Image (cartoon, rainbow, N blue to C red; front, side, top):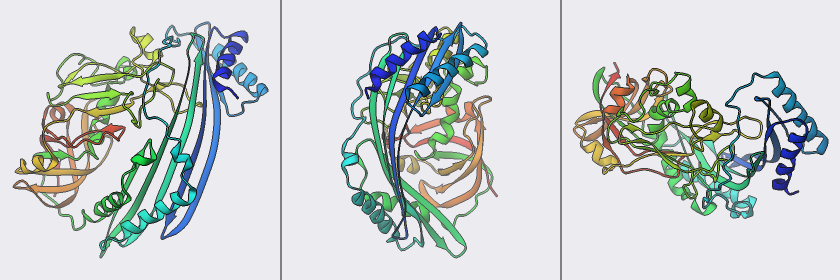
Length: 444
């Protein structure tokens, strides 16, 4: 079946059935997961799926309905439901669809090799990864290893002339292990996810990292309550900055629920902080040629040297704000309406390695784990539980746990005084190590 042609036909069918405007979002996909534990296969699951969502406008009112049955009768019924739902809602001038028929050419989104790799090899990779991680003498138990892959294709068409499609893939391999010492138990997990099979990290490196994460925090100590430097490891940077990203969501700004709503083109953070969202990164895990409603993706600097430069919009929220979509419509699939999200989000790098930053810190915390929700996007406050390593005289002294860290967004973001160069651009949220000169730490 030619799904691209089908989506165009269905848009016209929506109009014939009474819609003033219509969008059709069709998604097909396949998933495979393999899980092993203690050298045995626990599960192998593979599934294919497809479905379609209809967003229609009638007299300025919007309705949405979806179906995983692509038969003609099911599609007709789904269209009828969407139109009926629309007639029950309140009219809104912002109920509009995009009209940008452009297409961003993004390299490296689909690897046919993933499907060609034999099932036996995928199972063997998971088994070998677990065996490698268990070789570390400090590791006492396995939490299991896994292989995962998915591929899918998106088709979108609307009554403003948009008709687009793209295909994508992703594969991953990971392992979890446990280090037990007397009554202490620590877990460590590591994985590698890539668009292309050939780009997966070596199993030896994944295994070594998982094992180290399990035992490196054994025998932790407490430290006293104090104000001191906090170094954010790349693995936990997102936990701090997630609230900043939510705060520049255009819908939150319109709702008055963002601590950054009055900060456009103003300095609100350290000049070392630059945040970019880019949906065009080749092989990027968050890359795509267009967003969840067909608007071409692009590269946008959201925060430039500590100055807020832009908010995130989909078409509906942009219309409400009197501006244009920024290509940030996110979609959980054919069952959901477009929300607002990011693509590949990353921080600008500095000049220092993590070792440089530690060596330049007389006393402080290297943060490796944090609980909580990061900076509150409404009031800008942050507090959370923390684990990591205590630093004395520029060297890691011992692991610590049971701490809390707290501060306001202004204090934390303006306190960034060192930015690292150790960024991993394979992450959807990529950050180098960075240091906040001083934060409040709650300890013993």
